[in-house]
Structure formats: C-alpha cells, structure tokens
Amino acid sequence: MSDQSSLTGLTDQEAKEFHEAYVKGFLGFTAIAVVAHILVWMWRPWF
Image (cartoon, rainbow, N blue to C red; front, top):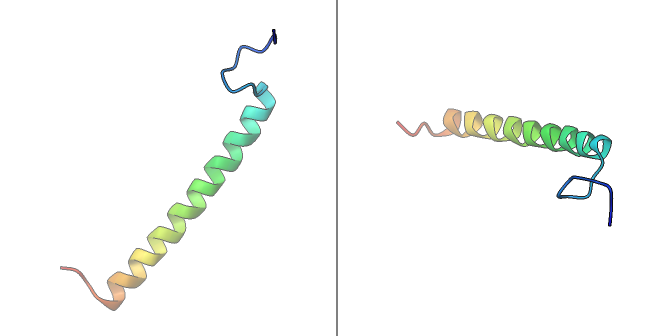
C-alpha cells in the first residue's frame, strides 16, 4: 500500500502546482467572461 494520505494520490507539491494552475485558469476564464459581458452590455444593454 502507498504511504500517501491523499485521496488523489498527489504529493503536497504536485497538489500545490495543480492548484496554482487551476486558480490561474479560473481567473483567466473569469476575466474573459467579464470582458465579454461588458462588451455585450455596451452593444445591447439588457435593462
């Protein structure tokens, strides 16, 4: 049996690297979504 206590099988360092990439991807996606909403709002306001 493995001596790792993680459910995913990742080491702490691997988990930190994955988390860092995940957060960067999420923030990038959110930034693109915000810009897209602003552009659509400028084109056709929905109020």
